[in-house]
Figure 1 (cartoon, rainbow, N blue to C red):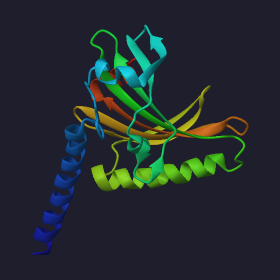
Figure 2 (cartoon, one colour; figure 1 turned 90 degrees about the vertical axis):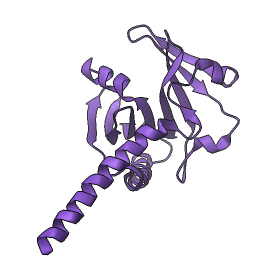
Figure 3 (spheres, rainbow, N blue to C red; figure 1 turned 60 degrees about the horizontal axis):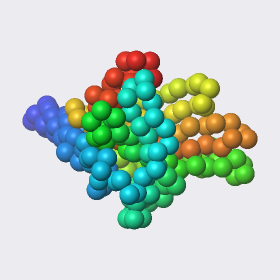
Length: 187
């Protein structure tokens, strides 16, 4: 009887986890912004930041009329960026940013606290993340977690740029195939 109950509980956790990651694939975006949306859907609300010829993408700053799009749970983000594949003009990534300026001496601690709250909310929604992010390069020290589904990937990352440069949090949703290609190319 005990073994049967333990087996049932374990299988429920496994099913719950896989269903949770599947929800990420079903959502396939962030709120009303969906991956594969055409560039034309956003044409009067975006401005070009940069084009990357090496992976045939362009990054745009998105200024939506719906201010709710800046909210991730109870966190208010400062900026939304949309990444499009140039050849298809289809959306492949959504990046929400919050900056913690160096004028706040607790910028890194504040960023980590908010990222922790975001992470806990996403864990409740999608289950435990299936990939940890830890990177130290010229752009700063990065810590985060990712949920990688079959079609969509979500990450929450905190970057510490230095005491005099501040910190930031990023919530990103990308097409899984694009994220995997970037990782395989040494991104």
